[in-house]
Length: 209
Image 1 (cartoon, one colour):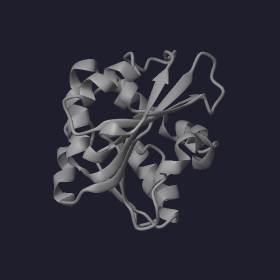
Image 2 (cartoon, helix red, strand yellow; image 1 turned 90 degrees about the vertical axis):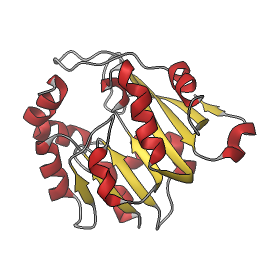
Image 3 (cartoon, one colour; image 1 turned 60 degrees about the horizontal axis):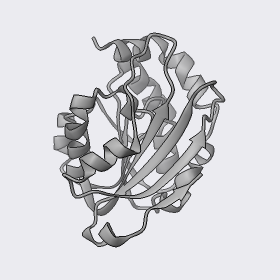
Image 4 (tube, helix red, strand yellow; image 1 turned 45 degrees about the horizontal axis):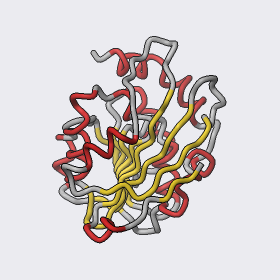
């Protein structure tokens, strides 16, 4: 089993309490203007404890939550309503999603990208892009800072995402930099919003510090 997946399986309960100690509005305030409207179809990639999926569901969204950790999926199912559809899937392929046969208005990949090896990132972004509706948004959070608990991570950057998006129908339309919501030393975040719409090619990227 992947070392990270094993870690999340073994520590799901403890991590869920940690993640749920900060709410969706605080963690994701930097991209508030892109939050989905009621009725939107949302895919939560690496849904973990279900905190974000629960928020989307409570605001009228149709939510699919994917999580490869069985322990996290169980906790997430317990903490969200039956309307949230949980699936065992992970990047880069997301093959288990094929049965859903619909596209999404918003895809959120929060605290996931740093765990994906660099050679698998193009396929990961392609897999999400293919499941994104025209005009839909893909939100990726980039974690800067190492782990000291055995989890593995790989360097992330806006430049790398920009390079990959040049090969896809995605355009970066928003970048925000934030401190760590859990106040962990040496950890900072960037949130990147990408849009799947040809009309945004001439849109100026907004940067928020």
